[in-house]
Length: 605
Image 1 (tube, rainbow, N blue to C red):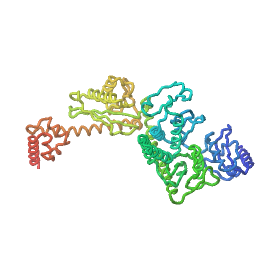
Image 2: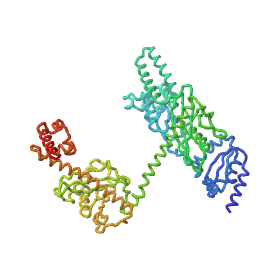
Image 3: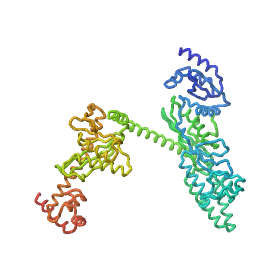
Image 4: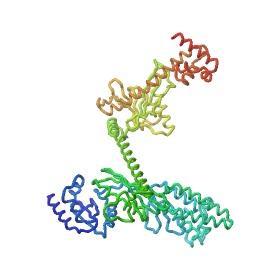
């Protein structure tokens, strides 16, 4: 059955004309699944059904149920038609240009006293559209420049001669701010306004030099007529324009209007860079990411993307620079592969842009893979703990006390399954006397989330308490007092049998000992314990050092604590110069400390 179908398609291909055109492959439902162009329709389409085809192409051929075609005058027209049909049908097996977002344009509106503004909608209303631009920021920069140079209206009033004559409108704040000359009340005539619009058109077309020359002559004319204020206003406009022009990469004034294309590719992906050169300056750079479907060669991809971008950006350049000449006729301007000089440098600049963008794509993919690597683990944890949200942000608390006194607590933070060490926090417990683990947990949990709520910071999806039911219930009380108990999943992990406890649930949850969810919870618990132990040791060292200092006559707990807190340890105090100690505690105390420590050091040795 498949063989007879292939035979029928081969016969159909053999009957196609030996002429340039576009062919369309359709599936059994009549949907276009592939569009291609050819210098000879018969030879190109027959190649799919004779000889060996491999990989994805074999899959495509297996799904072809019918063949359609459109004849064109030449191969260049076929390329343009192919591009349009791909955009229309978006066939599954054609290369994918990841570039279909809505780009901003600048419109000069078709109306009396035309407005100039940003739009993403192209209407067939007779207005002029400039672009598209790859960056809305660039559009706003251009519009800001235009508004600094020319006070154009921004209102949407219908400024017909009849409405202006009938005095339907009043001047607005824009007039009083000097940003509009109030054509709405006849204070600027349309002829003067349209001269400014013509200058705006030249800027948008990249002909900034023409505008500069015009303004320079205007400035000289004003100065010659002793109208120095007007000459100064024109001079300020010139400075703005020259500053803007200096941001563009100037290539060579002798290179006028040129389009530059380069391509970087791998078996699955290609990146095409486009540089637009107007009057010797690069005014636009744009990258297109092309996802290969049938392992297309770059010789196939480049003409298609060039055709698309030249249509989209409305290019009228008479010369196109490319790294190689694709076979067959090519649309548009004269194609040229530069070998040396400024044109070669332009092509190399385009290639650098393409390579850089390609590396950015690879970097994003690697970051995405790393991030996605934790998705299954977090999804498993969500299911095991019956959570509504994915626990991307988890916090864990562990309490400790120092020989029954000086309770401390540690909080560690995990994001996307990994420690976020810069967010770890220590707590010196303030309200608890003695070894009361429940009261300590109640205090530190309240302090932690009261602080987050005050700062407007995000709350974790999951909080883990190192301890059993008592510590868990203490933590829950704090969340209830803050009114956030329903916004956070709270669990406790008991060390003995690694049971997972939920508030108000007397029966613990036992996760499989090999479960990735349990391992992550254990990792959180162990990390909180480790972080708390380090804090303990430092505090114990400070306390012991402070006790040693308090043995010195005239040195009390406050002075000892100040020294240890500032210098870090007893050894550091011992090594510090007397002058440094004197700056902290005064000359007399500094001398006593140094004498005492030196005597003890001598006895020890």
